[in-house]
Amino acid sequence: MNSVELKYTDRDGSIDKTKLNIFEDGSDEEFLKLVKEFTNYVDTCNIWEDEHVANTIYKHFCHCLTGAARDLWDQINVIDDNQAKDELTFEEHLKELISPILGEGALCNQKEYLKKTPKL
Image (tube, rainbow, N blue to C red; front, side, top):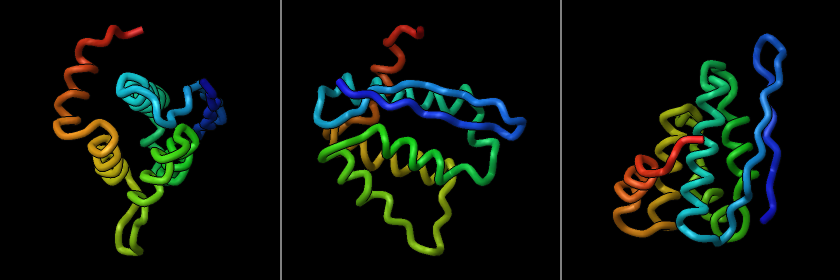
């Protein structure tokens, strides 16, 4: 499986890095693992604290997808001029991506999966 290294330089100049697998058309578990690891990366690095970082987060998540999943993400991410890219919008777009990839009831399934998955 291919992977991508994501780097974020915060305001004080320190660099946070993580390596994530790229999701194409794998299993539901692989997709949920990507979502969990990406969310952990963003939360651990406190990336949303920087008000100008939304484009970076969207770009980083896009790098984690390929194939049909990437095409769907690109369709979901068409934002009109009146809509801001922010944490709430990103979460809504992520929910819109989860449903078609995992099927009906995906959000409930995801929550259950994340609750049961051991933290590393």
